[in-house]
Structures are given as C-alpha cells and as structure tokens.
Length: 593
Image (tube, rainbow, N blue to C red; front, side, top):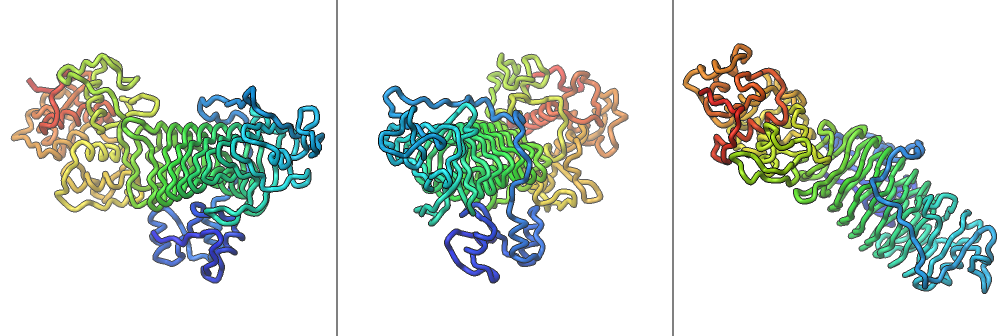
C-alpha cells in the first residue's frame, strides 16, 4: 500500500497544496495521525477491496473523508468503568517542600508560596521548585489571562498536584505556547514533562491551533488521575524514547487523539477512559507501549496502529466506537495475546469493524472477546494455554481448564486436549461455552489448525467470502483440500452453523476414508435422516470410529447444529485415526459392536 505521509515542518507540494498548508488547514498531528492515499483510480479500487471507499475527490475532500474527527457526545457518568484500577493518591513525603499556588488570591512575590500566602501562577512556582518539590495547585483557572506563560516546564523531580479525588475538576490549566521538539520541530503545547516528574489531579486544555496539552519527549513522568479535554489536537503526546506511566485519567473531546505514541516511545497506559475523540490512542513509529485495562468508547476509532508499532494490548474494553475498534496499518504488529499471557480484551459493538487489519501480515489474537463477524483482514485466533490432561486414556485430570467444563463432563478430555495444542480456544472469562454452535468459517479455521491440509486442487473463490473477511485464508486453505467445499451457487455460507453430518462428512473426506458398503449407518436409529450424499462418508466415519454421540450413542441427529463440544470430539477422533494422538476412552464413542 502506498501512502503520502504528512510530516510536520516539511513543505513539499502535493497536488498544488504545500504540506505545511495541509497540516495547518486540517489540524493534523505528526507521523501517525494522517496517511493520505494516492488518489488515483487504481489505488482507490485497491482501497475499496480492503474495505475503504475513496472516490476521485479533491485533495481537501479526500483528506476530510480520511480524518477522524471527534463527535459531540458527552461523557456519561458511570457509563463505563476503566477496569478495577484503584484511584492513585499522591501524597507529599514528609520531607518534601510544598509550594502553594492560587490564581485568585495568590501573589508572585518573594516570601510567598505558603498555604497562607500562595503564589499566583504555576509559572512562577515552577521557576522556584527544586527536585523533590510538590507544587500544590488550588481550584481555579490558570491561563494567559491569569498571568501564566506557556509552555509550562515541569523540571526533573517536581510534582504538579491538584485534586486527585475528582481528577482535577475545577482546576483548569488552559493555554499553550511554542516548544521546539528534538523530534518534531516546533509544537504548541501546554506543559513539557521532564524526567522523574509527576502530574496528578489537574485538568488540561490547549485550545490553540494544533494544540497539545502535555508533551513527553524521551522522559519518564507519571501522569495520573487527571482530565485532558477540549485540546485542539492531543491530550498527551509521547515521542523520542518516552517511557511514562499514564494511569487513571480521563481523555474527553480532544480534537485529534487522546494520546499519540510515536517514534520509539514505550511506557504504560493503564486504567484510562478515552471517549468522544478522533482516535482514542494513535500508535506509530517503532513504539511498544503497554495498554492495559483502558475503556475506549464512542471515539471515531478506538486504536489506530501504524508503521512498525508493536503495542501490547491487555484487558482493554474497546466498544461502541463510531467506526472501528482497532485499525492496524502498514507493518504494525499489535500483541493481542500469547499462549502464556492471553489478551483478555473485549472488542465489540463498534460500528464498522471490531478489528480492521489492513497490514501486510496476519494478526494473532489469543484469549480475546471479539465478534468474528466484524473482523476485516487476516486474523488468527489461537487458544490460550490450558491444563493438558496427564492421562489421555481416561481424561481424568482433577483440574478444570475451563470454568464451564467441569470434571465428569462428557467432552472434557477432548476439549482440553485440543485446547492444549492450540486447535480450539476458550474465552477471556475462562469459559469454553461447549454448547454453542460452530459456524462453517470457524470449522474451517479448526480444520487448518488441526490438520494443516495440503492443497490438492485450486482454491475456490466464493462470492460470499470477501478477501478482507476474517476467515478468508482459512476457507481458501480448507477448500483447496478434500476437507471442505462450498455450495453449487459458488457460495460458502461462512456464517451458517455447521450441521453434525456436515462436520462428519468433512472429516471423512479430508482423511480419505471410504467404506465398502453403507451397512454401518444402520446402527443409528435415525439413519433415515442422513442425506443421500452423506451416506458413504458417514458409514466410513462410523466404521473408523470418528463419531461421538451424546447422550444417546445410537442417535446421530445428523441435521442438528454441531456444538463446540461435539466438534472437539469429532476432530479429536479424526486425529486419533490419523495417528496423531492417543485414544480417549468414552462410553459415547460409536463402535457398531
């Protein structure tokens, strides 16, 4: 994919407009925030195939279409809760020097700065603060009109503190001034946070054009229990080798992003609320931040991850965003969970896609709750690590790998054995949901993980499986093998729930099983319900002991939707037949004897 990347302070002409003009006109942030596709017919078609619809518009119209501008909804109290992260309370050490500031009653004079006689401006207080000093800010507004000089500079070892209990409500620092960044040239910022500083219990707004509230450049501040709202661009901007802790804050109605993470920034972003902004968090460059237990809701898109960024995403709730939950572009590789550390993210109810993978590679997601119907691009779902049954002959582990698959459950051993091999997956809440149905696309994914089938024919292009569908690759692979085919009208029906007979036929055909006659199906009391096309494969599967019938071993129920537990049992028995695993004893295994 080819992009023209708009970079601040570069003035190269694009279709008659200079980049500096575009940046200023459209209020763009550097690096990760806007990437403009080349507006030619061929590229527009390519983008359309990936789920983006770009017509041959003027540059301004096309840019406007791509910019994600925050809506006008307001924060609803208690609408969402940012995990179980406790409110952090900053307390000055007993030996710390405390300087007091009050914009209404203070005076910037020698001898002031005490509780009884505070300074008037934060600017003056910070000029007097030495490492270890706490600057305590009283309720009020702190702006150019009250004597502040921006940007404020928070020097090493200094704490700037308001009221943590209400996240700085009623203590507003508003304004901005020019700062020359070592990585992004001239910026308009409210405050520069240096090493070993703390910001807590304050509200920040930078209403200036392209205004950012707090700038963090190659430093490691703690920013917590504060509110960032109504800035023209970003609430917080991380660049260079920034490594901050950003915890339990509110990011609301900022014109660009709640937080931008660029260059080689790291750090942790934990327990924050991002609401009603452009991108909740924009992550680019080669940055590797940790995002954990954040609520990201009602933004245009929740997370925008670009370039070679590799953020670690754990236990976030990314819901009800007006476009996408997560967008990944170019060579981004978000970490959505590993077998030893499942993602635990809830990514649902976003308007277009919950996960939009527009990168050149596949994203692996382990242990997340994502609506598979709202996934665009290649995404591989793999189970988290679970307890492996130590005795596959009995399946009696004495342990519960999934909270809803208890000891004694008829399919427990099958489920745990396949989950341990990464063939099937559970859910972030520790459940398996054994009685839920399985779609044809999900079954294709299981087939690929279990058997890794070789292609024996050209993959079929199904008219109802678009190239950006989450299961496209799995369906292509399975349909190029003997395991799966589509329907005569060139459809695959990926969201259709697979029937028990369809799953059995698929496994029998995929393994190349045949039967000399169909007498084996007479074992079933409902053999008359087996479709004629399936009689031979079902007879072969029955003779080779692929079939598990619970609770009545003689009842096949061929047209009933297969459950997750039943698919696990069928697939495990197919692996036994292939010599890949040891048999598990079960009273529900059909032996026809």
